[in-house]
Image 1 (cartoon, each protein chain N blue to C red):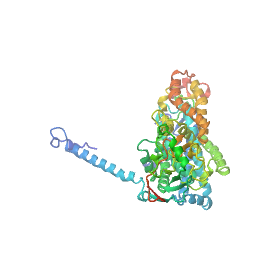
Image 2 (spheres, chains in turn red, green):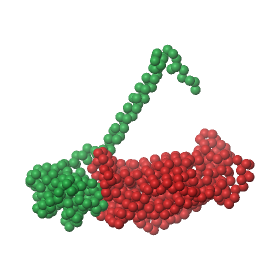
Image 3 (spheres, each protein chain N blue to C red):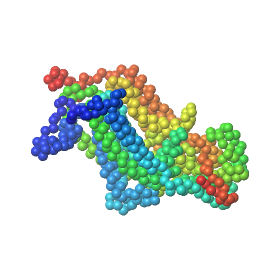
Image 4 (cartoon, each protein chain N blue to C red):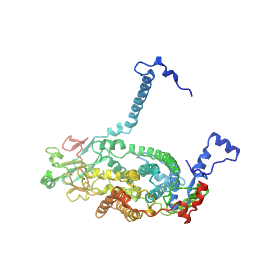
Amino acid sequence: MSFPWANEYKPSHPFMQWMDEKLPLPRFVYNAIGAGYPVPRNLNYWWNFGILALVCLTLQIVTGIVLAMHYAANAGVAFDSVEHIMRDVNWGWLMRYAHANGASAFFVVIYIHIFRGFFYGSYKAPREMVWLLGVVIFLLMMATAFMGYVLPWGQMSFWGAKVITGLFGAIPLVGEPIQQWLLGGFAPDNAALNRFFSLHYLLPFVIIGVVVLHIWALHIPGSSNPTGVEVKTESDTVPFHPYFIVKDGWAVGAFLFLYCAVLFFAPNMLGHPDNYIPANPMSTPAHIVPEWYFWPFYAILRAFTFDFFFIPAKLMGVLAMFGSILIWFFLPWLDKSPVRSGHYRPTFRKFFWFGLIPTMLVLFYCGGAPAEEPYVMFSQIASLYYFAHFLIILPIVSSIERPDPLPFSITEAVLGHDDKAALGTTA
Amino acid sequence: MAHDAGTDTPELTAGDGVRRRDFINIAAASAAGVGGVVTLLPLISQMAPSADVLAESSVEIDISQIKPGQAIKGVFRKQPVFIRNLTPAEVAEANKVPTGSLRDPQSLAERTKPGKENWLITMGVCTHLGCVPLGAGEGEVKGEFGGYFCPCHGSHYDTAARIRKGPAPTNLEVPEYAFNSDTVVKIG
């Protein structure tokens, strides 16, 4: 679906006309990311991160396919094959650093994309399905990133795999058989490494599939915008091409500039030196931490150091960690405010900037810190607030808050006035 | 496309309204469904530990060189196993604790073999999230209770390898084992 004033695809070249009758793929592209897709004219830079995520996914798939041509998924040689890529393969170092830092870049982009959604209420009707599919993509990304980090078979790879698969061991009764089934053994070994490689190669293509659904679901109501006011007339929109193709192009350039700065000048900044030590099942590194993008959730896992009624601490930590993301699936129904954008919600905005954001930063910091005081206490307080934000604060705020007056239309928000007389003629 | 009138003709319909075609539809869908589910079994089962992994599930270890107060790390199922020769003082300390006060109540006698109370044989796998605790190697910290200490999330185990402090839910696991002789123990 699109707005009635959307430009229509009119192929002029005979070949394109012939193509349009046989397989209207150019028409599809034109209507999806071309001049045939009208977009709100007031999108700010936070709206560039969807395209940036797509750029990251492409980057990861291209570099990943190259790396798979040189990597060997066998516990005996995996570590050496990564060193072989780094030292012997032509441009291998570039491909591996691009892939490892590409994962970090992907998560930076996706976290901004998600928090854009939190602030501007992008998850609200009629875009719930866009949001739900987005959470699915995030979960798939986390699984893919985790399994990818195991492949170099260094110390952090091995012990990360052990700790994370150990989470499944916390499930009552069936936990241990499930853990052994996932690993294909009693501890991470060749069987686990092989299946992680297989799935690490598969999941990005599953992500592509869900991304197609995500964009499909988005294009039914059309993009949201910073005012949260729906598109009313043609003057509220501009065609995606050339306006947002150009703006996205600028964003991609800025992104690549920062990405390359890290890639070429600090490629190991976000890595962990312990992962340059080959996996040793007999010795645990003194300080096991996951990659930085898992820190907030790892902090929630470790925050539960005491039994919760009849639920043991270990299981409670696992439930809380998974729950902290699964709760996002319920967000469209927890936040009942009819006003989407945080711009017009003074109370919500305070809880967002002074509640949720600092909480995430505390969790982020504590997840990377050792499991000792005062970090444990900080993670406990922050975990509590995190769940309270979604389960208590959002529902209450959305029912008692008095929102600021909304602009009549996107056009009015942009120009300061909307020639309402023109409504009758264009509609 | 024309409507499939053939199946609706009266002569093919039994008295109770059930058509021959209904039976064929249900039978075909059921057979395909059962077949599909059965196909999943090997696809799921292939991920379980394979025969060669299971074949490594017992190991014999020589313990003749372990003096009282010493411990060694063996390998059992590709995981560390701690074999510790407790000193009389450590045995006494373990027996001094009332088992009722423990998170996972077990006495030292329940965790060792009769007559071999000084031989504490446990997995070297923290029951929290699977790290290798310190305390078996020479010079490693043994935690506040003189047994083992897991550096990952701070679990302390006592001289009977029972959980005393920290997030781990249970004592270090005692694997199945038997003394083949006074100097050789078979684990698994």
